Image 1 (spheres, rainbow, N blue to C red):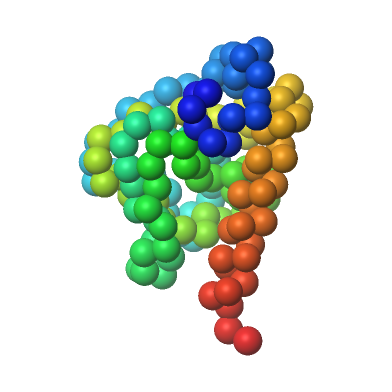
Image 2: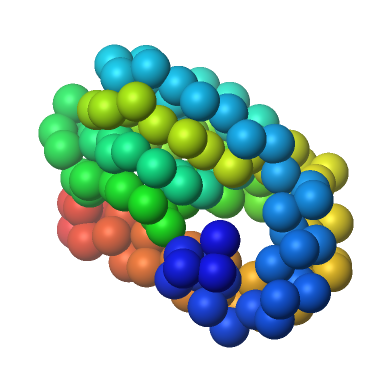
Length: 131
């Protein structure tokens, strides 16, 4: 995890705390990881493999090691803002809402990184909204 941009500011102790909270999952290519409009219940960090994120059927991002998704749904129990589909076999580090909250409490540097990611996503959504 130390090579993932979101965690570069974390100490070794903080990285160990985060790792203990995550559950590693492997998924096959083609698996839909999230579906736009569905409720969200987990935050995932891509450790290996790649995925594509779409909104309203249009590609909005390609995701790879170090990227993550699901943080919005954990902070606000609304619906997923995009569909994320595995392009290749993937390994994910997954946090449930309770584990995510604990990780933010134990590793304050993670909260700052997540906030930057949320701000970027808000800007992306705002740019797509009709005026």
